[in-house]
Length: 246
Ligand code: IPE
Ligand code: IPE
Ligand code: MG
Image (cartoon, rainbow, N blue to C red):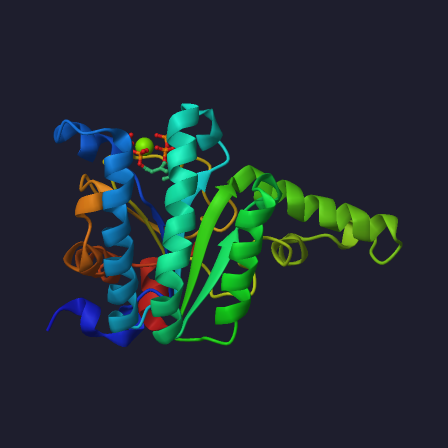
């Protein structure tokens, strides 16, 4: 029996930086967008893997607030890919009882795209097998700023005193606050950095970096990341002895 078979060792919430599409395409002498398209299959596979293994929440970094700096052509191709995926994948996600949510500053997207995102979220809102969050125009610093702004507005309205703002209160305004805390962060593509993903939520997540390029990531890779996680001892500041006693 592998350690990941123990339900207590299955991460409830996994976040993934899906990196390496461009390099995957380059290895095949194809344009970068070919790699982005190939990444769709990996998304499907990982969603299926999460459903099978009983992971409750999957948060995918699809487009960062910094990715607008890429060549216009690539940004355009990515937006088209998102729209196509939205049109094609939502039926299946819905039939698998997946709840889809977009996180990030969605105001940057045009009306058509926003409407389709809203419709997909509304359609799947009652599902509970897996919560799939897709981070779009997301930045961890943006997330902290928008939470701080909400706190400031609440103070300005006289509903809250500044000294009442603590970690729990601010955390309540961060994206994904209503979901189980992040357990496992995975980054494909070999880079060992966070790239402004879930900064606040990462505080005590376990980190797993793999050289596998995103289009090659599959259920077996997910399983080995979960097995890696299952071997970790999460101490949250305590000693190993204290953890063993609990
Ligand atoms: C990740 O793959 C996809 C997005 C950022 C949208 P990359 O496009 O960053 O691939 P590499 O890192 O250049 O290989
Ligand atoms: C992070 O990947 C963003 C997504 C995967 C959406 P990048 O490829 O943009 O990150 P950097 O630029 O290498 O840090
Ligand atoms: Mg990259």
